[in-house]
Image (cartoon, rainbow, N blue to C red; front, side, top):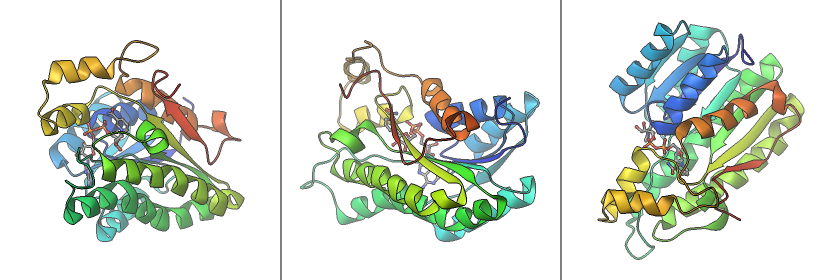
Length: 252
Ligand code: NAD
């Protein structure tokens, strides 16, 4: 119970990595606000936590909207009486080059992957400051560190997440707030299926390619979740501004 009495917000909490992390944070004792565009799926995750004896609330929201983020933070405050941990994890990908990407698609990817993190920090940092600290974990990507093909807006957005995380760590470290990014490689979630669909590729061969790692398999959502639990907990008390890579060795 490393997170006993902690209150957490998880965005994209209904998706592969978000659901696994919501469950893992709850298993360590945290109360979890499961935030997602998909209201029904978010409620199902919250119900899964409650039926295991945990505390959870589902909040339907578009994280790229400031009004929605303000409502998420206010709801978590009202339900739990504070916010100690935020996992900024909601994300989308467009598998297109610069030539193929429309301005609207570029803005949408940045709205969800980057602006949402700025907005969440804008509204949650004052609460953490008043409480004497907190831990914020942002989902970057291996492609935010090394780049990748046919995903220009995604790679640019995830690079922004990694460096924004360092800047946030510098600004808010003196208030006791730690900010780190977790950077997955290929993890078996709906996002990979979506990528195969966008590229018009056979899903089975796309997933097989994703397993071409030193560890010879793709990652499972729970393996990213455990890295987030560590960053959320006091076990990582001297770690801030870090870009933790969880990718089966794909970057080596
Ligand atoms: P996923 O598609 O299973 O989950 C993403 C979740 O985010 C979904 O539940 C979706 O409804 C939600 N979401 C999307 N837009 C939203 C919005 N505007 N507001 C609120 N919620 C929204 O994918 P995942 O793999 O679990 O992705 C989680 C994070 O991990 C993303 O940031 C992604 O970029 C990152 N990531 C994933 C992989 C991978 O291989 N799966 C690799 C590197 C990074």
